[in-house]
Length: 225
Ligand code: DC
Image (cartoon, rainbow, N blue to C red; front, top):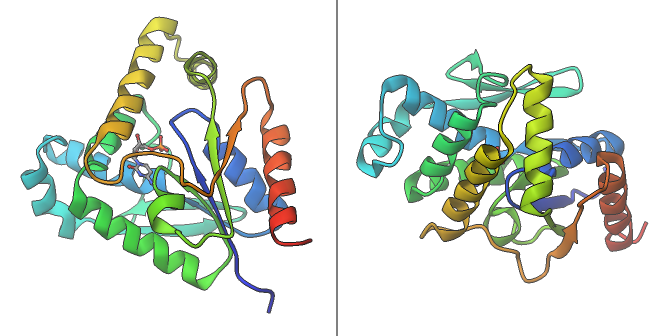
């Protein structure tokens, strides 16, 4: 069997991590793990229960009620919350914010990090998030910190929302992205930051294909292929 390896991709929301990671997984035929989706699933559960996601004590009391699994469906992976497919439900700005809130809670991180480490133990993965290179997969062979300017990330987000038929205002979305950046980089527990040994990569103006190909080139160099 080929040697197991891991690609850790961190960066702020809208930097194109997930889309690039998905494409890399497909091209290299390895497993993609969307850790943001796991925090989003916890956020969704809390929202549905009417729990304030900023209230650590309340979130912690329901943590044991939350069971997150992945289900392979063709070449995509669906995220299941207590057996329900929530892959599409979690992709809203509001659930993104809830995810950012619950991600600031140490016990939530402990539970999800453990799951993520278990997945990476069994197979080669490309995993994206905020703490992958710094905490979850400290020994990953390849670490990337993917970034893009806030204006570029706002344009991308507006494009995504447009595709869903949602017309949005540039300044409002930009403010939401900046707020989430602030939340993610200023929280006490493992704030988003570049791992010392990560390659810093800005992908303004680049397509998903160009970004994933550039990362695969780094992977090939690191793995001596
Ligand atoms: O990547 P995303 O937008 O789906 O992530 C949603 C939120 O989840 C993000 O704002 C912060 C949190 N998150 C985290 O704290 N750690 C991760 N590894 C991934 C996401």
